[in-house]
Length: 107
Image: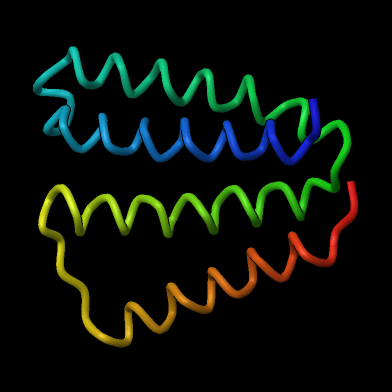
């Protein structure tokens, strides 16, 4: 499987794990916390093959950047999180960086 597909799976699992972590209410609801741990574990399992074929700086930057954007969007849509305009501007810069790295990296 392509390294970018593994990276995409890892990103989806990271965002899902963050969602479950929020639902766990600081691990007061242990079932959600356990699902969070499972998602993060599977996330790293998917991340490892991507690191075999792509530079670690690229993988980590894209993984973290898209994860931030996904978690932010999920927080807004599901939990009603609100951010200031400048927060959106800085998150947009993260998106530009992640997309730029993807477009300029082969593999």
